[in-house]
Length: 150
Image (cartoon, rainbow, N blue to C red; front, side, top):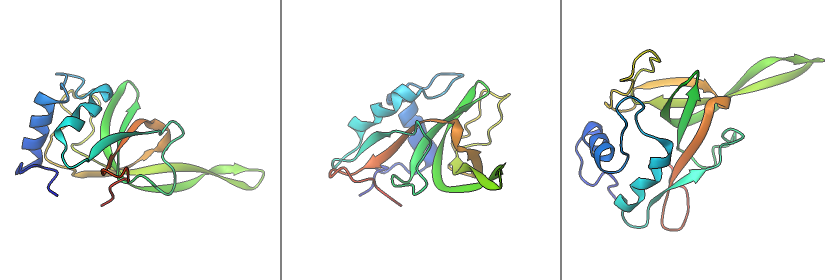
């Protein structure tokens, strides 16, 4: 199954989505409410499904990969979650307190001062982001409702 429907580059596919389905905003970019608009374009029963990330992404990444919408300090962007990690945040009466991190790839260097943060050349920036900054998430499912994994 070719979910790219013969687009030859990530840039061409992103441009097609931006114009026809995602209603890309000049400064803001893609709005979270527009993500489900992609579903009519998908074929063979595949669909984008909302994932509840209100308490962060589960440690086992049961729905992986996930496209997450991360927001902090008035800015935000979409990223592909490819893993999870945790580190010791501190100690409380000798008990380790952990913080959870999402390992993500994004489509461009995140520079909050710039409005054109998405270079659309493909996932080239891998970094870790605190789990608390994810607000929305989506996964790709097949016609049986199973999350598609890489």
